[in-house]
Amino acid sequence: MYQDLLDIFSSREFEVFAVLAEGVSVKDISSLLNLRPKTVWVHRMHIMKKLGVYNLSAITCLTVRHEVIVV
Image 1 (spheres, one colour):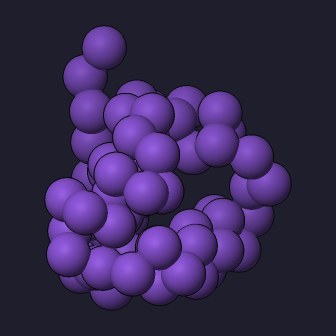
Image 2 (image 1 turned 45 degrees about the vertical axis):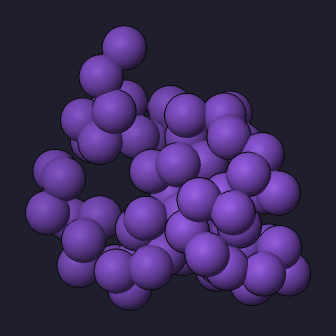
């Protein structure tokens, strides 16, 4: 299942996806990944559109389901 996510996301989108799921703020993600906050927001928008979800809790659920993060 993890591979399915790698197939639909760019490598940068996948990085943002994994960090978003851990509850990290956009500001902190931008610092962590050396991106502008607006770039993180754009990646977030693309991720949500590709997954067909509309909130961060749905992203978190998907990361657990696909074993991107372990709780």
